Length: 316
Image (tube, rainbow, N blue to C red; front, side, top):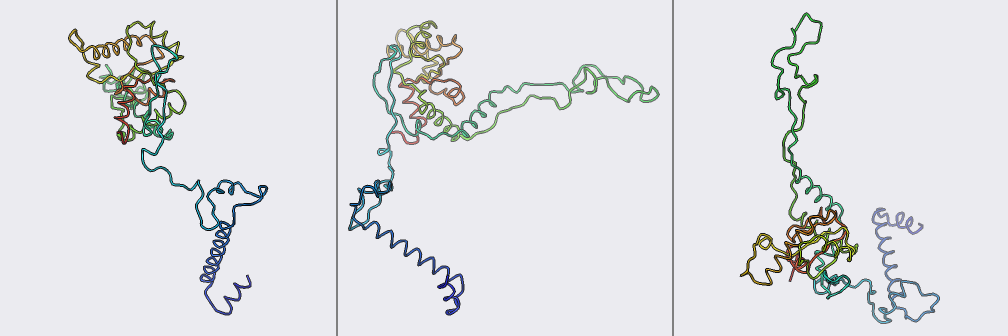
């Protein structure tokens, strides 16, 4: 304070410049103390070592300054980043593992965005509304063509029709009309919603990868037994069939691999119809609403591969 008064009284310098000079001097002294501290030898009594010193002890040097480990640069390339992994389970043999699959971080490692999920769910539900609600107005209700009583002389309130909205059986004022309830949502937001939903299922341990979802029979009892053995009482089954395969009619001359794939998918669709808490959809039919509605999400390897190709920002 005395130095401040002296500078201001003797040199007659504006107070702003004096304050700036004092700050520069303070920063210079702080930097000097920091460099002196980093230049000290590492060997110190164990009782006086701070937590920060323990973290940075291996990076300190008596002759040169090196940044601590936690200041290292993060991985900037996709190859350096660690991809999440998941076990590949056998659908026909509960409890058996057949391998490990790598999951793309752009699809299965997104941060949780409840705002995006809410926007996509509202978009889906509004688009499903039929919008066929209709109420008749006074001009559409049958009857009420003549004036019920004279305008004057009866002592009653004047009216021109018994279908006036104030009467029983009259029309409805501002009633619902058939309209489109759907709203627009950018494709990028819908795409991000799928990524966030799949990532949330994977983070919660409710995403399971299986080798195949093809069934040899269309009987619901067999599928129900498999789901019970796996512990999937409330599940969404995602198969890897394409649109052409879903509409394909197989014959005797069809390739055996393709024939088994198409028939196995159709058997799955037929078997899951009688299960109220389970649903089967192809890969192109997955949506945020179903991913959040069902507790377990079961995906085949083909479905994972196609989801990577469709939703991953950089798939190789």
